[in-house]
Length: 133
Image (tube, rainbow, N blue to C red; front, top):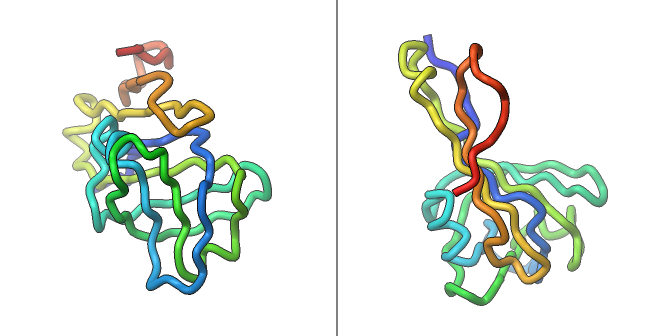
C-alpha cells in the first residue's frame, strides 16, 4: 500500500506578485526550491494563511535570491500581494519506507529568504520534535 506523505514545505512565504494573465503556476525563488528539494514542474499545494484558500498548481523556477513568490494564472485571483502562504509537496511512499522518511521544511523570513530549516521524521515511536539544520 502507498501512503501520501508530506515531502517538502515552504512555510510562511510572502506572495510578491499575482499575475492572472499568465499561463499558470507559481514562481518560487530557486534558493527556496533547493532548500527543500522541490523541482520545476512539480505539483504543489498552496495554502493561503490570510484567507484560507487552498489550491494545487505546479512550480516555475524563480531567480535565486530575488524572494519571488508569484502566483500566476487563475490561482492569482485566490491570493493577494503580501499574503502569507504555505507551499507543500507530497510524495507517495510504500508502507515499508515510511519509517525512513524525513520531510524538509523551510521557514521563510519577510523577504522570502531561508530563515530556518527543519526536518521531520515519520516515526510513530519518536517525539514529534523537528531537527534544525
